[in-house]
Length: 252
Image (cartoon, rainbow, N blue to C red; front, side, top):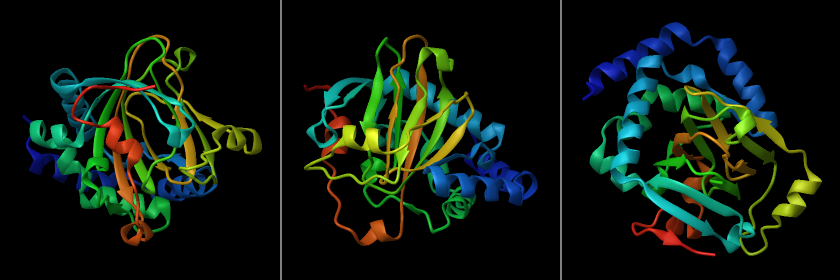
């Protein structure tokens, strides 16, 4: 059991003492150009460990296998084990507490260059995924809300897949997603990741995927956040509602 007050104090002290202005400036520049940036500096090792320990426990306790394809993303596959926001909030304490931590929100806002808000749609606030079987993947897609902060708990070497690819500056038309058109008309950027990494992505205008895992496991917790404009837009959540449904789901 973690003392949440201690974790929040460690987070505040880390931001005050160890995050340099150049860290924010570099991440903001990369985020603006690439639609994503590593922001591993936002949390100390103690907080990363607490998040990782909770992820590992919750995957074992509540992980549900999924094998899905969605018309809204040209039937790209989702093969994984996951834990929903409701399960995380019910069974854990660390992830839900860190999600709204003021130092996290402030630094993300600085990197994004605009205010970053907790997601108003609760199921997208925080989730856990685990790619663990040969071929498990989170295929090409966009997210409904503007931002995602991803905490990498475990991942295989890049030779075994599980790395992130993205295409910034793209728009999600759920009736005509046109993913292949986006892939041939814009550059694809790839990101190698390691345990303990965190990255921020502008997920509503950055087409992205996790490449299929061939060996090892990729465990992450994804924290979704909203832009100011998201707070007043009407958004639908077709893929999210099916991917994170309470009952195990298989759909082709």
